[in-house]
Image (cartoon, rainbow, N blue to C red; front, side, top):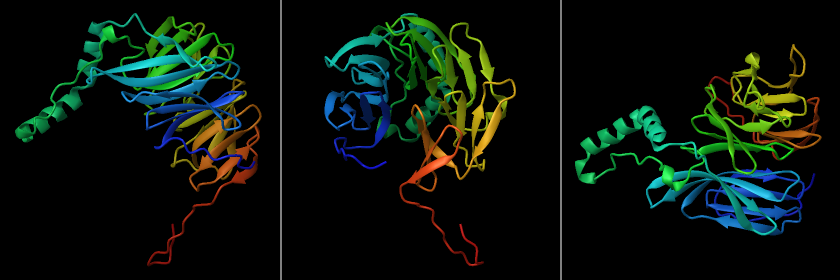
Length: 318
């Protein structure tokens, strides 16, 4: 592995990245989405000053870019929406709009789930009446056309390009076809703050860290021994569980048998991971990137070790 090129186009932190066989895409806090080929040539740009970028997803074998954003409508109302662009023409070809959402559902949902926010806003208004602080929450509007009623935190596309899934921050999972028609919608029981979606195969969805969902009959399998991990990614017929500083090592778990087998991935406390067709990589808390085979063996380390040792009065260190 060696550096090919440094690209400095985005002025703020990159928050999402996705790769296909021909391109890679990035989205950042500066409200830009860029798509490049692997020579570093930019082939697509999207910018919306009235939107916060959520996630970008490229399908491995297509020229389509899927993007989740939270737009601001009329300067007040938030609009979580998923867009699809054709990278060849550069044109938006579709928005994923859930026509089953009603305004009554939105109002009831926000009335139930924003009590704490409303109380805090009311308290600030009472404490500082001269500040003219905002005391009401403006609920999303059905008339604006919504994909979800809250910020979208994850997207995934099946390899056969038949299914598309999305999940918002309240863990409401939606299953679409790639033409934009919604097939099902339900809330996932999961106590994780961040949940990612990955298609393991054309019909099985990994809902991180430990739920396997069959999206044809909606049956699920929960890997109960691994619920304490915060994150996971699929690796062929295995799952790499990681990101919990209270657990000494990450686990690579073969879930294809009735009794899942796991192997400790040594030296592997980490909080970011990714995978390709024949290997996976993770960023350790020491700042090193480790590249592994699918048996969990570390093949290469990249970067600079940032582990710090600090002496204390009693001679100890951390």
